[in-house]
Structures are given as C-alpha cells and as structure tokens.
Amino acid sequence: MSSQHQIPTLGRLETVPIKSVWSSEPYAFDPWLSMPDNLQFLADALEIPGLELLSTQQSVGPFYADLVCQIIGTDQKVVIENQLDKADHRHLGQVLTYAPHLDAKVCVWVAAEICDEHRAAVDWLNRISNEAYAFFAVEVRAVRIGNSLPAPLFEVVAKPNEWARVVSEPHQNAELSEYSASNLQFWESFHEQLVEAGGAGRRINRPLKDANYWGPLTENSKAYISGWRSQSRNPHVGAFLGIYNPDAALVWELLEEQKSDLELEFGEPLDWSANKQRTVFKVVPKPLFSGTSPENWPAQRKWLIEKMVRLRKVFEKPVLDAIAAVDAQAIAPGT
Image (cartoon, rainbow, N blue to C red; front, side):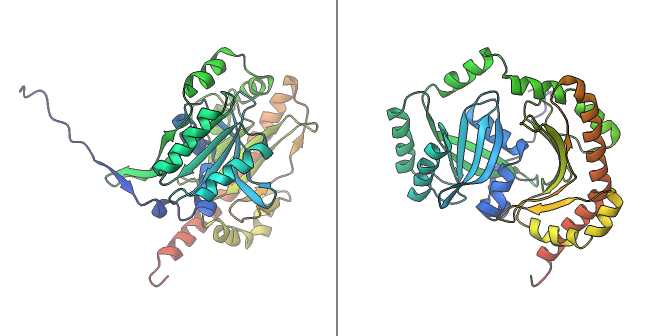
C-alpha cells in the first residue's frame, strides 16, 4: 500500500435514547417538529419538496391533531400524528379520525417503534386507497457520532407504491401557485438585507415559498425571531419572538418579570401570548396592514427588518440568560 494513502479515522453512528433528546411528545417533540427546519427533515424522508405548517393541536371534536401541514407548492393537506413510544392502535385510529375532518389526503404516523402488524395495516390502507390518498408509517430516532449533538433520523417503514413519482413529478412540472410565487419574490434578497442590518437569519439556504421567515435566536431551536406575510382579506406583515420546547414556560416566567422594562426598551406595547398547552410563547409587535401588490413590498421589507432587528437587540440577552438559568436549575444537585 502506498504511503501516500492514509486510512481515514471514522466515527461510529450510535443511537441516543429518544427521551433524553425529547422529554415528551406534546411538550418537546411536537414543538420541535413544528419548526420549519425540522419539518424539512421529515419532508426529505417522505420524498416531498417541503411541508408548510398550518396549525398545531388542531381541534377535531374532543381530540387534537398534533400537526396539520400542506405540501409546499400544492393544496394537499397532511396530518401528522406523533408518538415517542411504541406505536399503538389508538394513535392509528386518531390519524384515521382526523383525516376526513381536516380534508387531509396524506396521513403521517410517526413513532419511536412501529411493529410489523401496524406496518401491515398502513400497507393495507395504501392498497385499498386510490392514488389521491397516501399513508405513511415513520420511525424516528436520535443519533450522533462521538460527542456530537444528537441529530434526528426519520425512517419511512411503510408508504404508498410509486409515491415519489406521483408527488414529485407533478410538482416539478407544474407552474408555481400564485401564492408560492408571490412569497418567493417577496423574500428574495430579504435574508441578505436582514443579516446585514443585524437580524437573526435563516439556517437553510433555499428559496422560501412559505409565508413565514424563521430566524433562530439560539443554537438549540428554543427561540426564534420570525417574520410573516399574510395575503388574507386584511393583508399585513408581522414579526414575533417565539419561545419553544419543554422548559419554555419557565423561560417565559423569567421574561415576564422584565416585561415593563423590555417594552420600554422596545419602544412600543407588545402582545404577550401563549398557546393552550403552554409549549409555545410569543411576543408580538402590532402588525403592519398593507396591500400585497409589489409596489408595497419595499416598505414592508423595511418595516419587517426594523422590527426583527429590534426584537433581537432587545430580547436576545434576556432570552439567552433565562434559558441558561433554567438549564442550570435543571442540572443542579438535588433537582
């Protein structure tokens, strides 16, 4: 063997206990998966272009669907039901209950372990359904190499035949919807302008067809500063600070103690709100109501950048300090 060719030293991929990464499904995994960067992990596993979040904990009678999404560039709704344990009959039943009520033709069942019987049930659902419907069974794991941070790994164990061809080919050949095309043009160059002005920028470098721009404030996805544009009957743009994940409520309590000082520094009243499950908390300035036509975009971009930069300037240190305090308390002896 030539001395010029050295044998590389490689790390070994190992599985991390899933509950050590996400302590619970509703309070840790669901909020984590709802983030755009993380939804893209799942979308890649499903072999679709991307997933746009429509709602979390969507009410269906007395039940709640974990995540309701839409395949980017299409009008296809996707319902996602999550488990951090071994799959069971109840969750499969919930998926089938949610789908007709939400008009979702794509159902994704995510679990830490899916047995052969449940895999066969999903395969059967795909066999008896026409190509307009799709059912997926997906196993989720956390893995790492050496001392690296844990990384998510989604493995699709059951899916429709020819799914990649049915979904991706029409998407590639079809023209962009007016909604997606408008978003692409609006967000074009926005990232560069925001970062140059001192804002928190996206991690994913790909064209943005979604209505939301997510800029992580922390490395661990516990806080984001985000901007959005609405093309509804009352079109507007807005920005917010979002706090997520299991300890979000504790971080939020520390921030609320500083509410008056933070609003004074920000320079205007802010809307402080939380979802019913107290897993997501938001601080929102008053939105800017303005039309969707391109002549309004420069002023809207300027307003969004100013708000997002100011949110970062005012809230970054208090948020990071609060997260550090909560983390320190969690690992303190005797806790």
